[in-house]
Length: 378
Length: 249
Image 1 (tube, each protein chain N blue to C red):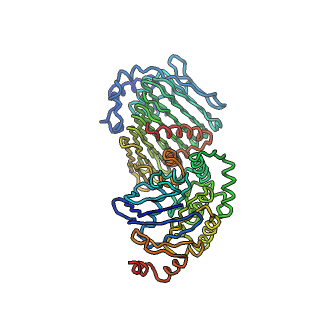
Image 2 (cartoon, rainbow over the protein chains, first blue to last red):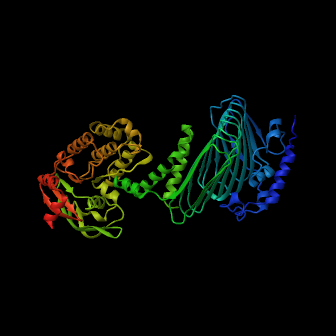
Image 3 (tube, rainbow over the protein chains, first blue to last red):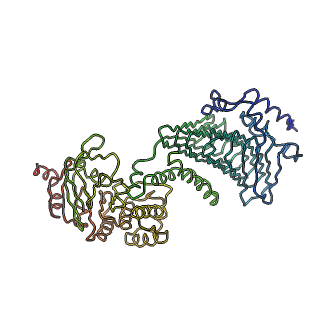
């Protein structure tokens, strides 16, 4: 039996309607409680943001790519899948409705892509990213955001097939003059895995929203992230992990170092649906405030409708440990060096979640540079 | 080398040291003994420069300089070393890279050339062997998951590496079994030399069987109340603090 699926054009116009009816999100919308986008951006700004430029590294064997620029003829698999995952979020709807640019990637069944793909965004505008991993496929994507101006909005949707694995390392440089929004929506089939790591150095407004649905038994989500924020930056990481079926696992580990009068947000919701027994989830979010004017909002949340589950969550906001600082200084390390070392130690376990050594070393370099500037009190 | 005169120190508004005077010459090992709460740890922290330990009056002169005016890292660079009772754990920083960073920070402050990783490793290995610190420990995060004995051995290894002029050992014997204690004491004894002074702070006489002091000072209620040779430690062990404090009063 065929279930009628709306055409791509219909789906797109539905997304447009959705954005038009809700408009630019603001604090009275629960998911946007800590980030008032409406105060910084009008619906007109969103509608006329244009096409976001991107570039990608050489495609390895087994990876198909389609440029989503409007006017180009699209492959059938793109027509069929684009805009199918993650329809809820209003900025995701905007990215779908307005994007004149973007990229679709498909990794064929049982293809293990050994070399990481690098996807780079510069400048401003909307982009759509569609990633399909067929059964048993594996891909590592490094998504790099260069600093830009104005407004950048990305809607990424990922379909992770049975026993497939998607490793997603997102790095966003500090962008004091830019509003950067991204919605990552992924559906995981049986025994599929999503490993996400988000490094964020803050923007005028930065928001990464990850909506991850564990739709098959044995599926596993591991997300982690580091925010190093200085000046008057704002970085919001919002996650929705949905244990739709049982025997699924998710772990989250987010660390934030916040200086200047920056603000760091973690809003994480884990839902375990009815009958999704034997679900395991853990959520940890910690922040260290490096100045009196810095602010952290950490809000882990659990919504459990099944009986036999194991879920824990924790959040903590604190200062650098004075005893450790004294210990290091008593060994001759100047105060700023000692502070940088302790900050590095604080984020270490989150960065360590990146398993690829080369990528991890690259991320460390970026994080360490940021630590140097945050410890100078900028 | 170290001259403390009528030192008064407050911590969180409470006066802990109440007129402590002490003089230590190069080449000497002095023991500070005292019951809990007598001010032993306060003395070690104020010498190393921990924030929150305020000198309200009196002076600490170290090699002719006012020690109280220096930041902890400046004191370290000038040769003051405190082996702590509770070394802190720092995840994410390997022990070896910490040792290199600390050694080079001290050298930089003194205007000496920094040493490269291979030289540091060679020096550390040599000291590690005599203190029975396995190479694998150096690759682990600083003090993370180390046993009490391992932490103390690493404190002494750092002392051997930094070659301080004044070493303060704060309750180095606490939490050690007799074998670990002997090992640590041997490490300390190997570092005794004519141009180095040591201050061994301890509650119990036990450690002083292995590190034999030149002078023993009894600290009670923030003041030195009795002084003597190494035999004073044995007297304390036999009579207990209460009698000595009563005799002094």
